[in-house]
Image (cartoon, rainbow over all chains, first blue to last red; front, side, top):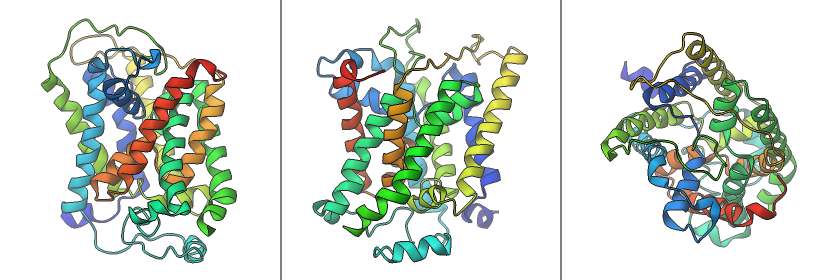
Length: 187
Length: 154
């Protein structure tokens, strides 16, 4: 049994489990699934800076912070107890492309050759970690949600603005992954 | 605060004790395990997705949305209540141009970092400590949005 758990899980197991988070949160406490809000609550709690957008009682939304703390611990538990030996199996075409940029290590879920503390001082590392992170935080809040809040929660509730947001996520992603990222990785 | 971006007062009247939140911690843990085990938090999987080189992420997101849709439909149809007996309410998402501009900007960041906000927390948990920088930068990005919010087109 543990062997099955240690293997990478297929999409038809993971997807429904993630989808079930929507009704579980609603039934547990009338909470709408959404993760990027946690970043706003962290701002409100730590650096509100007299900005209207951060002036609210973040403590009442603290369930969201407990949830993301849980995600962190879920990562810890998986890495220590449920890890499968071996590399991530990806499409050979991607492997060939990334090898051209010197990314050959598939032993971690993130490309450690690209994302590490040392490479922060390089332009490539700075863009992938600092600029990339900024775009994620700025964009999700500007859009009013991320993959969880719009693509999963919003679409589950048949909200057309969430469909617009999801389509824009994908357009932005396709453009950068295929056009911009190759330039960044060549730096 | 049902609407993610509304500047408003929260409507909850009963102030919950912190330990009431432990159930969300537990749910987060289970969620984080799924994230890691299905490799959703993998930068490589996101790159495959944006190059149409694998069905995996489309299968995950598609079946998650399908499950969520059926669940919300059932909740509405049978008027299912919360554990405390409250009626379940879901705030509608109001359209504004932010969903377009912000959506594209997030898409850019998603392709570069290979992570949405949720996976950032899970990646750090698996020991990718450099991602702490990405997370701090994302928090800063959210703050900058809040700072310039009134000047941005919505």
